[in-house]
View 1 (spheres, rainbow, N blue to C red):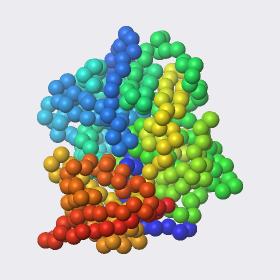
View 2: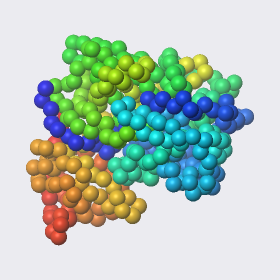
View 3: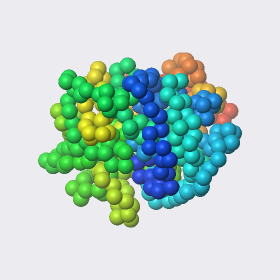
Length: 413
């Protein structure tokens, strides 16, 4: 297998893997955390393939949460906010990390008031992480304080309108299946939706079960050792896939020949691959071979009917867009005021950036002639994922020097 070493996957592919949580201590005191007499529609911000919503924590503190169908629980990433408001914790519990190989800790807080998008008030039990294990802000350039899990929305039909960046909560007795949408059977396990699909590698076609995970900013992730027939593509990049609970996620990224579910097909599909430890597979009933992330799900408008275990789905205007992947070999972290200072964290060996002389610790000052602070991290990533052959010009600060660096983008997988 021809494989390059890559210490971290590209920024837009950071993963929020909460689907393995084993939290026996969180059982909702209230079966329905909020009740709505009719459907309610909320706007969201779509950045770096995450769904971000405004949340008032304790009904007073304005924060931003990821909307995550892959998380069973609502989670506060930053304990200092709960401490500031004097939240009482029922108990401290051990959690599995996203690679399931080590324990991390959180605190259960009961009946916390949340106000979502100034429209819905909810009183729910939440998990408060003891430390902010994700480091999402550094690697996404976004302010992210928590995660809205399915304990808030699983009592409703969920409509994700990715064309207009809106989510709608629909009471089950008010829902009528839309005729123009394709009806797809799904399974619900621990309040999370799973779909059957297939992948093709060479002359082999494999059936897979995948979590529908809006909290993962990638197209497709496969757990390679959940099926003996899985194999890596000939050309991959190896290293850290991103950040999750418990630290970096090790794995690979490459392309599979074909991905298909129901009537939808994607050729030459960018795919992440992760091995799970054997002890983990034996200990946890996975019930899945991987996940479909929001980079894929954003290409559809869809309803999730948790009660009837149905998905109603329809392609939107993003369906035919190419999946982008970095062509520079750079991992960039956002720091400083409003996350507008940019530092190179890692450089892929033999990549265009490496051959041009860029190094870990270089501070990006200008991009294509403009101050780096004019750009968001997402827009920088978009530039570095544009067409092969494009010439990129950076001004970087290294120690006391300022250097002009030029290189041409190149396909890495």
